[in-house]
Image (cartoon, rainbow, N blue to C red):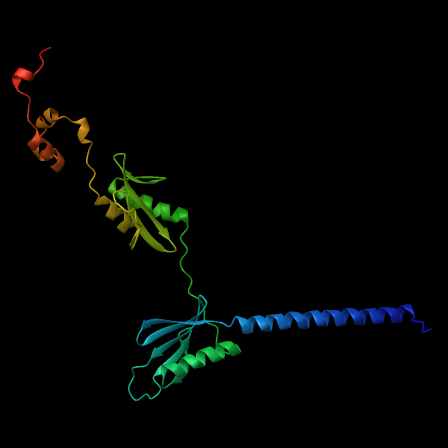
Length: 233
């Protein structure tokens, strides 16, 4: 019977652990490689113009392909990464192949991604509040008001300003360029006083130049009662 000293037993146990760890690592590497084979990267081409293209993998820009219009150049198609030329060819297809091959090999320079300006909710509300003050509007939690009548809402999502009119039938967010444009758009909404609170007799006592279009229409359709039908207190 072979006897192993405690030191020998520890060495053999260490070897067994190392072999198990190595086998586990090899298995994980195999699974990763199989996953890459089954789910290859998809390259997407975005055409900016007929002379300008962007190449994406997923949602990440990896390179651009542009056309060089300079004279006396035979290889006019250019691959650029971070606005720096990295390759030229005499056809767009060759440039595209260069991008895809080097990206798969990991030898394509890393493209820096565009970072959108991040405007916080407080900053957006502050800008809208400033513009509302210019027009004499009131900014509340649920929208922008004038004379207790809601004109609509304004906001900024992912760096893009929008405005939504309360009078719009479909309540859609319409793109605009700034907080000023959004509030100015709402200032074009006509706010009329409640017609039901003013009788035609009261309107007749008002200066004609102060009457609204709707009030003029009411007066044109108004027919006073005959004196015989007027109740006498």
